[in-house]
Image 1 (cartoon, rainbow, N blue to C red):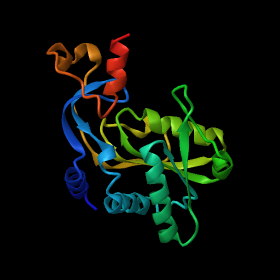
Image 2: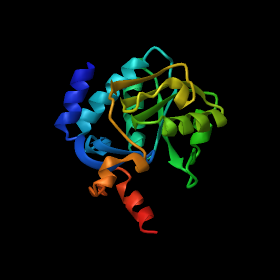
Image 3: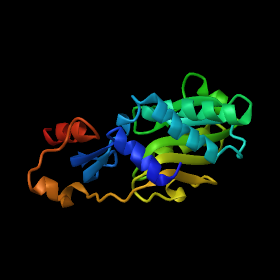
Image 4: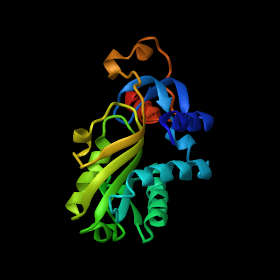
Length: 209
């Protein structure tokens, strides 16, 4: 699937939004890729996951790991398609948030990744922070991270920013303008932050303290 076809699919499911948004990184933007708009469309989600799996079909992946929430779905589907492509079981697990800004492998998943070749998957990345945290926790558990992949790379993220795995790639690369809060023209104009998607709700709550 070409990048333009991936973009068409994301457009079809309503993933592209305009307004005033706050990213996970805290930066503000007038554009947003609402990755959660994809997940109700199971066939389209599976199609993208198959493309992700095909990128790593020759890498002998044994476990796929994604950070909660959405990427937990991706991990399952990418692992399913790798299992189909490779003719053997590929495990799909997820990393939970640890409540301190990082991730943790619970439910015995740390034992599953130990000593295994691991692919880390993510739906969207702006700074690479979440992917890096998952890469770090997999390595801490004794897993060998052989690559990482996102559906959308929204911030020109390089592999060094995600923990420098051997391979880091994405299905789509987008350059969206974003600003620190103090430089946000939307804030200066008093345009309300969208609190339904992104991290706008947390931002607004913090402003009220």
